[in-house]
Length: 504
Ligand code: SF4
Ligand code: SF4
Image (cartoon, rainbow, N blue to C red):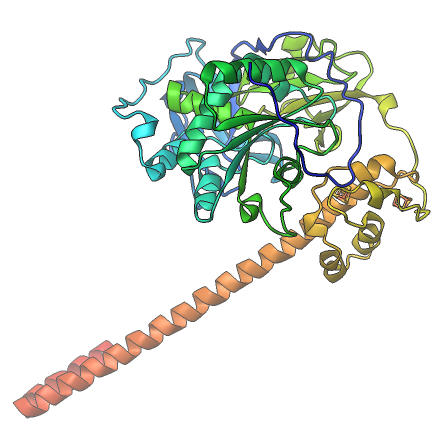
């Protein structure tokens, strides 16, 4: 077994939180049976919606492409099982595009027939990095830590700079969520195999695999797999259990002692971070020809009768998943997709599991306590902020809708970790206000970008019309000149054509 290393950078702020993970990690990951119907949103990534290439009535096979990527940050969507497309219509979702979004609805035939994998002649090590990246894109792989940034595009962007380290993020620091922990315990070799593929795609030789100290089973499983693999490029690093050390920038700081600049990316300091689940998904696609059509998710909280981790096909409704685990507990009240600090509260369990769903959390009525009081300027929120922001100041500017001040005070660097909310004695919903303010700023930026694009289109059209007019005039002048040389009859013919072209 390979022992983990400990030399670490320092994380500012953060909190030691109760994990609430023992109930969901008491059992192995269980497979949710194939449901009767799957609902697949065409947007399960940060970029433009994928473009459906199937129609109602089409019979599809497991692994078949249903929607192809659009735009520079697109990702494809594949069929998680065989069946028939019965609708392409708005369906309840939990996403940043509202409460409903276009979904491809498949009625499963229960046979789970898969397409024949493409005939592969070349091992990935024989592929040029660009060809390997294209292949990763074709698998619909996106960041499974919740950000759902298409993996291939993230690798491509990183390759434009100098990357020293691939950092695999096994730091699952938010309470209740344990899907990565269980994946590391049960599929350590697949994660390491995915890491090797990523190292080849990046053409680098160093990978840190970061895992928190409160995950002894995962550390042991990964240590044994590393010993078996005997690949010195991958180093296991044990990090302290402090929330939010799994944030990308915080993890880079902890593991490499390099500070990601404000408004920058880990690649600015030579690092690329990928979630351990993403590495396993890369392995499944590159080695086993299975695109991203299922994932492990945690079903937990006091409102769940039997908390556990399950593997379900993308598109399975939360209702089907919760029913499989044993249903809701009495007094179950609030349903969240994601964790208690960064998750989103939703009003229906008809929403499907998507690539981003790392947790389904159900809490009781009594979990919500505390009425909001005025800020007492205690400064506790600032002392725990991992980005060293001043949350109380940001809050005032968010209430005043002062975009300039919000930018000055670094709102865009806020990682929405919720630490400030947890310590605020006045129960002020700081993070919720920051999310809304960020949304408003993004909307304004989108509006400005749309206006700039419309202006550019208008100016391009005017320039084209001007050019066409100038071309016509120069052609007429040329014809006139050659007609002048040819004689009066030709001039009359030219003038006649000019009148006709002007519609007289
Ligand atoms: S939510 Fe934002 S402001 Fe609050 S502690 Fe986290 S990073 Fe800081
Ligand atoms: S923790 Fe709450 S009360 Fe204290 S300064 Fe921050 S916002 Fe104000």
